[in-house]
Image 1 (cartoon, rainbow, N blue to C red):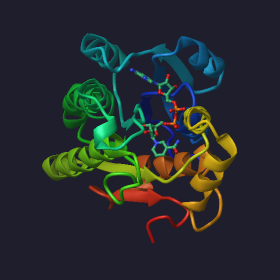
Image 2: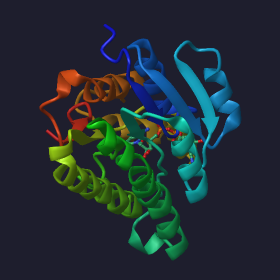
Image 3: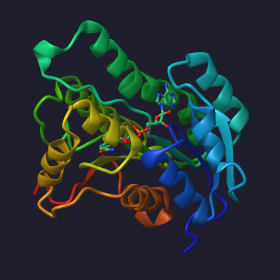
Image 4: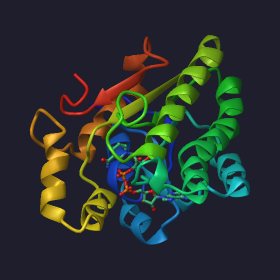
Length: 245
Ligand code: NAD
């Protein structure tokens, strides 16, 4: 199905994991995709894919955001995917950890939204999808204090933007994945010092008995990007193998 023909999408953190799977899916659905990431090497793997243009964008760089959005032209779909997981409870965290996580998970999103919204207002519509997590908006996994706090803020950002722009034809939703297979997930498992038992514990969080696939999140982003979901805004949608039933 090509639900996104004629639409132009901008994705952050599209070099690997969920962002990459989403770039591929939106392009398959007919969108013209600007796939951005701070890492030029991973982004390079998307070069040559029909419908995808790549560009290095560090979302911690406010000027780079402004320049990228200004050069991008019309943007119908914005997928704010960039984010980082901090591991630890409150006493295991530092103020630097807090500042970095909120800079990447929230402030970068705020800046992307402020850069993209005026164009969407001028053109009379758009669909924004923010990357949250089950951690924060919907539940609190152990040892994810800063991560949950920052992703809960993504829920507030999403609902506020949805509320304030609903009359201008702009929709804003968030996806809230449970555990999803991605390069950084494997790194987090290795960082525990016991990959096998950490993986077993992560799988056990999902009653379905498995972790999710990036493609499964990409499919929801494609739906939220498409006009098919035109009646849906301000929602935090869990894709979590039953974790938060
Ligand atoms: P990942 O963590 O493996 O990759 C993250 C990507 O972000 C990388 O390509 C990296 O280069 C890019 N990135 C990092 N800093 C950046 C910056 N400053 N500017 C631009 N890009 C930057 O991928 P993932 O696990 O699919 O995570 C993507 C998003 O999904 C994150 O926001 C994460 O919190 C969220 N999420 C992931 C899971 C999961 O289990 N994997 C679950 C819920 C939510």
